[in-house]
Image (cartoon, rainbow, N blue to C red):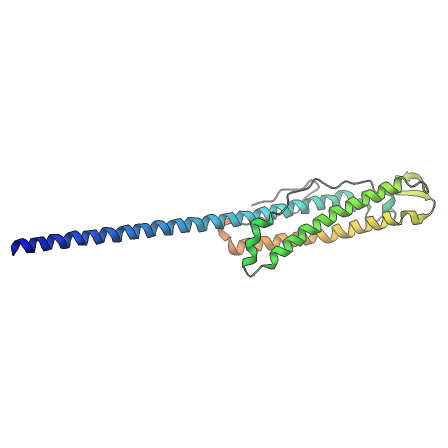
Length: 226
């Protein structure tokens, strides 16, 4: 009987150790799984936070390009009633960084789903501005090559130029320039406002990754700051 008791005790010990090892392995596997899940969550969070910053950089580059056009090309002639006759030809700035919408589509999964549409419309507004500059250049070329108009010398003091011929021939150029002014003046604050909304969104949902803030630019522009 003593032998049977000893065997029973041994058996119970072996089985207990076996169950304990299984439970330990299960806990270890669960811990490893939880750690992997947490790492994936953090990686996704960091990826999304970075995508939002990239979107801000893209819109900032577009805003900066338009602000440069406004300061250097539009403001010197804004109050000149004959600006359509004296403004120099201007080419569309080099295409800045564009928003990668695939990387920020996750915005639609939250309460601020409309933000994605606002970002899209802001970028489309930028494209409208560059298109308006293109139209002015085309109309300017037509004006320069119009045989029915005789252009006098430019008065460097008043910024005026005498035009002989049917003034109606300048109508399309004037309209194109007025449209360019209106489009750029309207778009600059739109892009700025949307960029602020992206920053607020980042601060709310990804606070530990920080947000971008932008300072007013000077004539040459200043880079965004962390």
